[in-house]
Length: 195
Length: 195
DNA sequence: GTCTATAGCAGGATAGAC
DNA sequence: GTCTATCCTGCTATAGAC
Image (cartoon, rainbow over all chains, first blue to last red; front, side):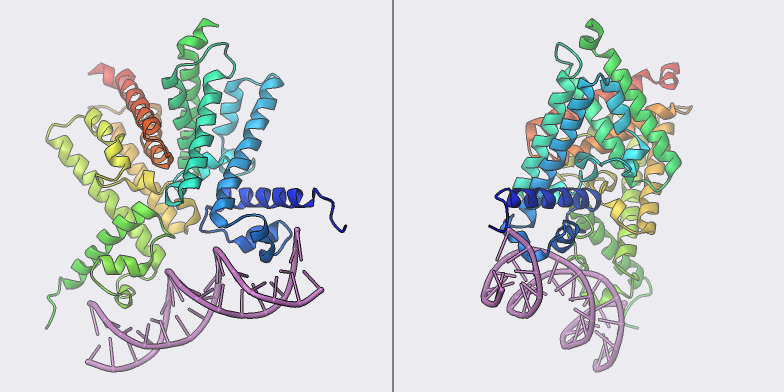
């Protein structure tokens, strides 16, 4: 038995991690299966034993990296971090410049519409999970839906727009405005004010 | 003389209009020069007599369609439309579904970072123009920068995110939240309150 | 389960006729 | 200034050896 029976699962996760990193950073078209497999330490031929095609990998990588992100946030919150702190870490130049692992919801926002149904459904599900998180995190009761929707747009839109712009000073200003506005919205939320 | 001397300029504008429509809708990679030229009623060979390469056309098309948009807004404002009305037209399912001409700032937001410097500069300039418009439109004095930045993110981010999502009811809810929040921000702006 | 090799196709860019 | 024809590259996906 040359391989332990967990070998395939581990290889699959290596491919997913590699795909998540490259896809999130460069989008679907600018990344080839060859590059993903090479980055995972394999060759292209092996790919089709793990995923049926490129699009399926894209959807799976989107779910994989988002699950990792949510797990990280859950851990941070358990360690006593505030939701404000997490939002400030998100709406940040470090994030825009990929010095921390980038959020696929923001980095791939206008890539998704061109993809097939499984990708669009995966993205939509990940977004719904984010909304859920915003509604319930750090409060006993639910935050207002309006508050959560607006904050999600400020976060995702702020990072996406900041990344598109070619002028660091405007990006910094933009991220600051989104931080300020998000924290104001959190503070003003009726539920938050009850606590 | 088979062609009037304005022929080249008119052809160039046909190519720009065709490129703007296809690029905005599908992004850079998913549109070929062949498709743009065919849509403009020409063949691929003629392309390189008008633009040096695909990327230059992309940058030019971005500027072209944005100029058209701003001209339209200026006209509407001159006809007595309110800024609120324009924002509501922007943050709208009709826009997301391209029943009206889509805004490249929103539709291409995560496409831009992959492109070369001339494209990123063109996008940044168009965004700065939008910010200018928000700061000065409909008031004698300037609106607060913070207000304008936040509204721009709600508009661009709201449309981009709404387009990515695969669930019409969430998109509608999202657009509504962005409309509500944008109009609140306009109303609360100190300068607006002076009038 | 991973490899090498290759089929098959699409698209950017150029050449040269008219 | 527009056309047709072509070069060249890069990619997805498959075949088949080990």
